Image (tube, rainbow, N blue to C red):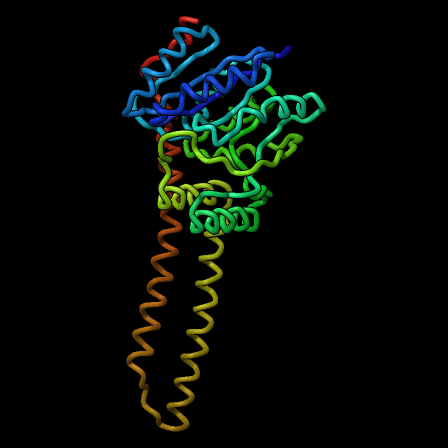
Length: 308
C-alpha cells in the first residue's frame, strides 16, 4: 500500500492536536501513513503536545517555525518534507473530517490525480462570513481564468506528481486554493457538510479573511488593474461631455456655473476612485517588491525529521 503523508498546519491548536491524532489513528488503522505537523509559531503549548505525540509514535514528524509565517508557508513546508506517494493536506481542528480520507484514497485509485473536499454548507458560521465566502468564490471565478469551486477547501489527497507540481510554484506570495487549481490535473470534488471545531477558537477574523481573499485575487488576475483603466476612461469621457455641456449652456443662455454641492460630490467621488486605483496598483507593486527580495518562505527553528 502506498505511503500517505498527512500535512497538518497548526497555529495555537493545543486543545485539538491530540484529539486530531487519535481520530487519524482510528480512521487509518489499515493504512500506511505519516503525519507531518507544522507548528506555525504557536504561542501556546501546541509544540509540546506535538512533541509528546511524536515521542510515542514513530510515524509522526514535526517542523516548528521560528515565528508565525502563515498557513500558506506551513502548507509549503509540509509538502516539501512529505515523502509519501500520496499527500493529504488537512487542518488540525477536525473541521476537515478524517473519515473522508479513505474515500479520497479510493478516488485516487479510480484514476483521479486529486480528491478534494468541498463544503456544501457553512452551518454554524456567521451569516456575514457565509455571504462573503460565496461572493469571493463567484468573484474569483469571474475575473480570473480559473474556475474555483464554491466551498473549495485546502483539504485534499493528491498524488506525488501533483504535490511536486505545486512545489514548482515557489512564489513568496502564495494562495494555495488558486495554485491547486492553476496546476490542473484530474480532480474530483467530494462534498461534505460543515463541521464545527472540536476545540479552541479559530485564528481567522473577518478582517483577516477579507484581506486573504484580496491577496488571492491579486495573486491570480490582473483584472483590477484593467478596471482602473476602464473607470478612468469612462469618467474622462463623461467629464469631457459635461464640460462641453457647460460651455454650450453658458454661450447660449449666459447661465453662470452653479452647484457647489454637486461639484464637491464629484470631486470627492473622483478622488475616491483615484485613491482606489492607486491602492490597487500599490498592492501589485507590493507583491512584486516582496518577490524580488527572494526571502525564504519559512525558517525552521526545530524539527525531528533529520532524526527520523
